[in-house]
Image (tube, rainbow, N blue to C red):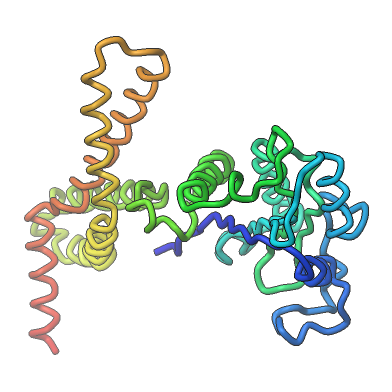
Length: 315
């Protein structure tokens, strides 16, 4: 079974001297990286910028803050860093140009919600185990306030960033799942991977039913071998799917509740109607998914149990 591929977006806030430290790391200004043994300096020439810094991080931050006329305190957050990456499995087999396209898409997402002029640097590191991007920006709001709290400052906002990032990236990369904080939202997303696995299981089920229907005294031995081979994949696959689906009960219940609420709306707007259709389609997919994993045809179970019983007896 394919390992999950997560889209990952994390934020960190910096106030003073530590800004210079993250700059030294991001811009590879150190000769050695004792604190991070994953850095392979022989590959550092493969790193590249999507936004090139014009000056030192702290100097650029102070310049933008002064131009915006913001009041600051000693403990004001002056730089926010977004770490963008994905599970190692996502990058396997991808060429450098394809990896670059992924990070360019991530920059496009961030600049939809944060003024591009506030970005100090966006650098992609290819000299560590997993490609990733450090994007540093000054947390200035559209009305020119210095407020990391407004931009990334609470759990609700961070959840919004995770949701929005996944929704943006999954359009181009459908195998990506929402980032690691999904547990905070009650697992409200059903990973696209599960739907693909369900489709695969459905195909296997149809093949098994076809084989079972073709068995006769003349071909019983050959068909039994084919059935056994398929069952060895199908039954464990269904069992794994059942385990995974239990994790997403909250998502299923949330969709059901939303669907009921949408149906009760008397005067529906175009957006509401569009959402009703979207939710109905998701529920239909989930129902099919549950039917796949919850209802193994008895003929298949009987054949599987018979084959296993025979094997154990022969041992």
